[in-house]
Length: 268
Image (cartoon, rainbow, N blue to C red; front, side, top):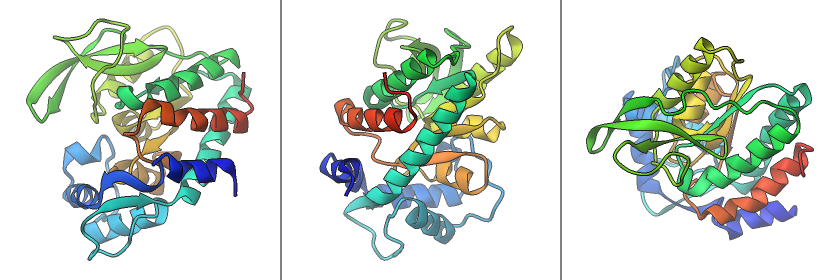
């Protein structure tokens, strides 16, 4: 058994994860109802009812396909995670070989910023331009507390958002965000500027879904309660989605960073 395959369940990144079955099923119901809070930028073309979403998540993540299983912790199949990590690394290797421009962004800055920042450093060292468009631009995002103005910021060349009344530019951690509006603003700014557009967008939540829906190649990470990226992948809008728990300690992702960079021949 590969060391990373043992590590994933030991660290709670796959196997039994912190996401509850109740939360996952609720997300599947909301996606089937086309709730924009769960679509996060994907405009599904197929007839994705709740049974179809559950069947897809069982196929891509390894969650239970039994709708009668309604409680307890959810599960992600480590083998599916490992296979997706390999595909993820393959796309990074391809863009690095071309020295193509890339954009990285996260809606999980507290947990995943370090993972993406290490990728940004390695891609930059390989000759890729790591883009930072729309720095400081404000975006109004609907949250559970109502409409809130957020500012796009970059930490270690990874895009994130922070509420305008708190935090300092360039500092961690940033806000948890599912919205596709920040990546749309970033891509609009890139298109309007003198520089290039990204040939690859790397991220999660709205960053990967919003970019993929606009026709950019997008790869990213998603939890068992995030059906949108997997539906996007099934419909061809998203290139690669890695199923894993996205809410673990940031240090738990470091072995995955090393694995991906080694597989992509980007180890420094």
